[in-house]
Image 1 (cartoon, helix red, strand yellow):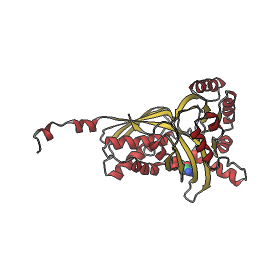
Image 2 (tube, helix red, strand yellow):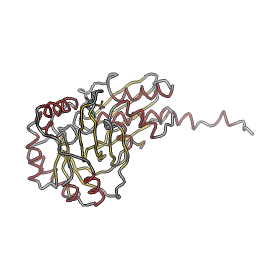
Image 3 (cartoon, helix red, strand yellow):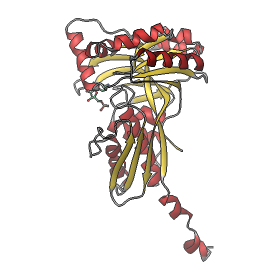
Image 4 (tube, protein in one colour):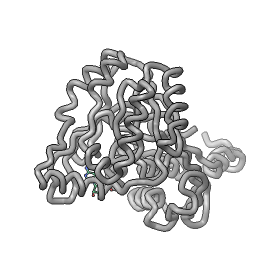
Length: 317
Ligand code: C5P
């Protein structure tokens, strides 16, 4: 039986819809990045091990009459907030896909550097999908969100998932890596300026065409086995990135960053994705703090931060 107060007095759903939705999303590093051939569609075939680390951006979505984006933090003033922004592209895609009006006031708080090889833009897009899904009550399953995410960018499905995952295809096909529960300690050395991902891929192709053998990563099997052993010394020997030589060719100064990490006794150091961020593996939290302090003292980066992984992907907080 329908009670008379059912319609009139239950205000929770309305209040629920009106409440802002805050989503936290991590940066990613690639523990292993094997770059295959350039495909006819302009992408490279990849085999990569993604790892989400505790450097977070935050996306807040509020009800609005149109779709707007504001931001603060890393890159404010230089990041374009027009329709080319991945946050707005992700929100519009979800709206079209679910038949909802694209109405939201979105605010982005950035800590992940722009064009840093940490998938910051992809992370924000993943966060926007999760935030608008909650704001608009579209209730898509995570797999469904991941499919939409792939349309926004190759790294976006991983940022919806988080943790540690194997990425194949152009990086958009992700499956979680089943590894024992273990926290790894890393240091991110963040550079002054960014590097354009397509430019680094082009440099990979150019070097290959010139006969420079840059493929170092091979298959990720050894790294996956190392993750299961929970021993940072073992993991250190297996980190590999096929884009590193190309990133170093475009940014020779990164050699000094990697050398400074070695001087600071990091267990290993590699360029993160397409760079220019360099990532160092530490034995524990104290070791990571010491490495970060040495990197900053050496003046080889704008900022060094100790982080841990794996952490979850885009989540409502
Ligand atoms: O997928 P996303 O839009 O983030 O990729 C940005 C650019 O990076 C692509 O346009 C392409 O030039 C390059 N890319 C690539 N191979 C991949 C992923 C990205 O060449 N697997």
